[in-house]
Image (cartoon, rainbow, N blue to C red):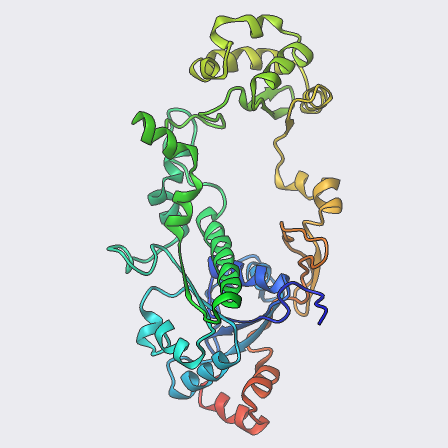
Length: 399
């Protein structure tokens, strides 16, 4: 059999809400999986109420739930539980982001589902993970950034810990859940069995902090917030141009010397005893930054960027969103903002896929579902329910 999309033989039951779990489901859907989003009847995912609202529909929800089909189901009802188990029999993956233990209390935890379908892969994402003393705490992105350490690293020199501007804990956890599910799918080809995948927002932040922990383990030093500078390299920061900020990233000695000699024309910076090695430059970062700013402020961002790139030194502008959506490399060449037609919102640009594949490239195949949009088609196909059955189940509040 020849496949056109990487996961087109995979069916995912998506019970997730808001950000981390839905992001995982959207990635799997873009990769070709048949993702069936299951929502609470008459209410749906909490994020359906999040702005911006366009023509009465949430563009926030639409972004994170594209490439999915949508049904409603009351998992607290006996009929709803029975229908869900019927779906599980024919599915490959279940993903959920309830507080740990909620699915067990419903009688629909992994131990139950694997008896119904031994090949089922059960992916769960939560604030603190399924076990440990904090497992029952509510988890939100800002808590993950705070307790995972990201806030302690982020902020101006001498300033307070600062939350990253996006939901970094949620997004990292969503990606980690995707990786775990894909690994479990491959493992199933070896063992014939499914397994549970557990991902924590806090763990996802902790593992992303790379060198901050390495430095702490080896020196005992706590990272000091230092704006856009990097504790391991210098110069590797934003610098002042006449019309904005520019990034100059000298990742090794050769790049630093090229910058000094070919870009700034400052041979004395290479010979200065304070800056002879990267270790010394990091120790004397403030002095080096002052010198570079005194030079860079006389040029525009574009002039500095072009001079650096011509010399082979990594550099680039600090974009705001309005500049990103006009950049031909990001928008056109890399197709990072494809247009999706939503039946209510209309044509809307959405964040594209960062993963590019030569044969089975991810693709957004449909807009996010309206609440219960696919009840009839999914339940008739998977559970062989009649139209009369569906009318009765809706009247009973099951769907």
